[in-house]
Image 1 (cartoon, helix red, strand yellow):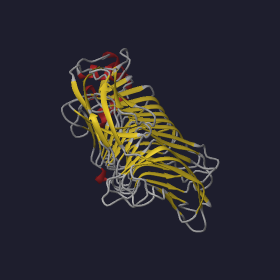
Image 2 (cartoon, helix red, strand yellow; image 1 turned 30 degrees about the horizontal axis):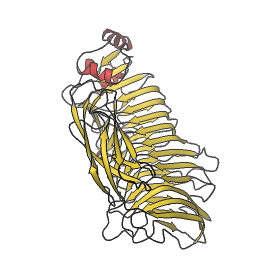
Image 3 (cartoon, helix red, strand yellow; image 1 turned 45 degrees about the horizontal axis):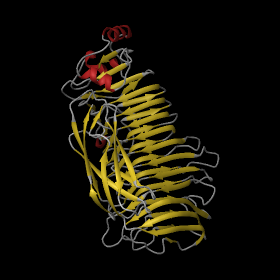
Image 4 (cartoon, helix red, strand yellow; image 1 turned 90 degrees about the horizontal axis):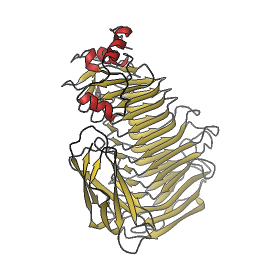
Length: 528
């Protein structure tokens, strides 16, 4: 860790002498929900060096204050690695501030801008702020912008994390009760987020985009290093995955064994866009029938003009990991008709399973011209059996066979139902003004009497209100369930401390394979 050049006694006296600041700093502390009575220090009070402010930033972090504000000084803060060396600390990076990694300032492969190890109750908050590195500067796949491990109750909010030579965020061994909210991970090299270990992980309202440089090149990659590491109680919701080179979402449990703690992952209300390989990649344990569940609910998987959507490798037919798709819309723009299956289930990767499958579908949608099956069993050597694949699938242009495999099947039954993908809707809101801490409820209601099929919707967000800064992150997709007339979209205004109203316009846009008529937009005024 970089040496601190100010004595601890001096730092503590500085923290006590400055209980709170006015202007942007005061607004930042209030918006972060910090205790008004907490000791607060500004980083600039410890110095600012336009070429390297690592020492000043480290001194502020080590000052003993409960809240450290990295304030706006009119130019970037250039820094090397910054360690969080105490519990119960809130770090606020002010709106408009950029922390930029110092050139050649991260010699260790475990380095990054933020290091959080062995800590409890840490908040790293930066609405409207950016932490940036230069991924081309280093070889390999390491050096995450935010690296944590053996830590509990860690929150990362509001930051843009860009250009990591490795991951935007990595949660290492012992990461317990972690929250990642309203974060944008952009143009990172390995993954936007790598999850090595998670015992309680909530990721919401965030965007994972443009990952490229070295495999896996995913939006989120849940991949433990050992059979004993947990992927437990993981919830990912209201997120956007777009422009990632290989995968939008990957869960790779290849090191799991029969004795591993069952994985439990829920992904809901997410948009996953085209990639070079698969929108979703599921790889269960290869050393034994590791159990658990991965559930995708009310999501849109958009393959665009790419060949793949979902790859499931080596999933045991009855005694292994269960993958379930509930009201998931599979869509693609393809002319001529798409020939690739939307879902490919492989009998193995390292070894071929005698029985593979264990996948469920509940009221899913296929929105595309298909010149082939929806699901394909991909057999390896021998005579593997595709087993335990069941559920309901609504298709705009039904194609038979819905399941195709060269081998035998057991308990494989997808109920294929026709739908037009069309709906007439009206968009309303329960209020026109949304003030700090309040939530407006936008409702998309379909008209007419035919409610049998699900209806998948896409919406754009425009206007002067800043997404994931002035209001919480939204995925741009929603699904009306079969038999239901409406779906609601909550729009929550954040407390930014700025009462200037800004406009947010939500406008419906048809997904490929759907048509939407009626009143298609609503405008809100957001004031923080």
